[in-house]
Length: 367
Image 1 (cartoon, one colour):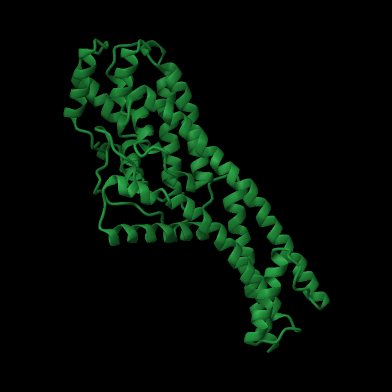
Image 2 (cartoon, rainbow, N blue to C red; image 1 turned 90 degrees about the vertical axis):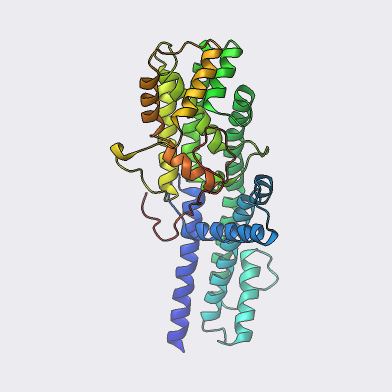
């Protein structure tokens, strides 16, 4: 019987330590370190919402947007609930394993009551022995720590969301909805702001850096949907990267260093997010092919040319250069788009029926 108590106590301590490690990795540690428990809860919520879509038999984008708008909030709530429940049960098992507690069903129920009272600092169930007092203090300390971390966690999460969405809304004003690279350049030319596009690349360089950090430190952010159904961070990223690539390769303008920096920042951010979510790496450079067709590129070229945007003379060379730039970010965009169920533009690299990647649950150490 003593051996059983020791084994139960050690197992409970290990479980609580694992939960607190998950909390620290998710909330405190300022780097992209995956947490198995958080990812398991997220995948469970995602599976339930997909099942709901199958049961209703509706799969149009408006329905998917309405259903998946609950994905991130429910996943976040489920994550917090899982942490609290596991800590509650873990300390209950520790109380149950103490010598003063009978190893019976009634003893387990009594231990659950004592753990809940201690964790929530309600104090309605007072421990009777010194050992139980110490364990109650530890339980209360862990409970208060979890509460304090959650209080700081939610504002950080929604602060990152607000920064992301503010810039997306400004892009829609500039490029329309859904935004695309050609529409961004065309609209800027029509408004007489083509010479001031550096202000766009400068702001979006900062945006990509922020998103690359926030969406790996707080991966739930990638699944928080924009307030407007036609807006989405993946679609916005694709539009800005296409716009900068078009300007660098097809437009007859002086070298745009800000556009180059913006594109590099975008590629780096997408690589960080893709690695964190377990998205497969790109094939070797000579095997890459982009989904966007040359015909789409030519149509955009003609539209810009009709607006009298200065274009380079060699269209084929421009297409080759553009293809090389787009191959740096399109493979990640093509997976992140359907994975987050993003809306599409005419230049989007994924289709509505594209397979959806799920973050791996077991290969979390690989980045």
